[in-house]
Amino acid sequence: MRKFDLKAFNKHKKDSAIYCRYIKINNNGNTIETYLVANKDSYQETITYLNTPIIKRYMYDKYTLNMTKEVTSFYDCIIGFRKEYNDEGVLIKEINYDSPYAFSWQDLVQKMKLEYDIDLMDKLDQIKNNNCVSSVSRNPKLMQYDIRIPCENIPHGIPEERFEIDATTGEVITHIKNRGKTYPNANK
Image (cartoon, rainbow, N blue to C red; front, side, top):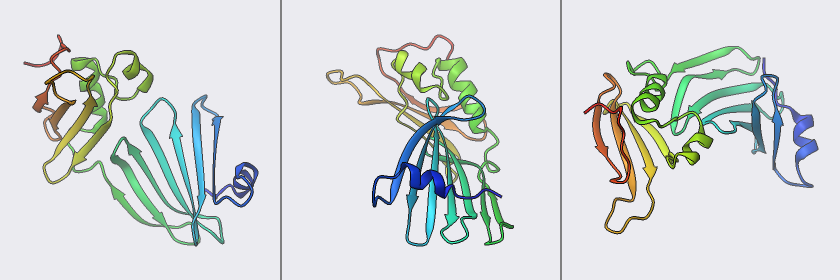
């Protein structure tokens, strides 16, 4: 059972602040940013894996320090299982946010890398290739992914490049393209 790290919170927070932020390297060698905040009756921990779009959030009971909720996100998409626990740490609710999508977020990452040379998992690569992704979202009602990439200011041009991709088949529904970019591997 995961518990809130009150010692780290007290060590990193400034005076009477209700939050703190620190960066460290975890056991897997990943650089992570941890943001801790004290709410009225809970603590929240947000872990950002730097250079990636993956964020993990945990909620903890303020008195027992036991985890009560956990969720993982990929850009604006909640992915995997959202889990809720009771005060004793017993799992009481679990929702699989990936189950409706036959074309998974991992499939989307692979498609964008192979067809458009946009690495959704590597933010440094996006900067290097002028493909900084501002958002990736998925809509369960429309069953599609939406990807938005701001464009350089082009007179009379479009402010962003946008992809709409079917979350069932992986087919591109719409691609509003920046006229300055070409994608030789993209499906026509």
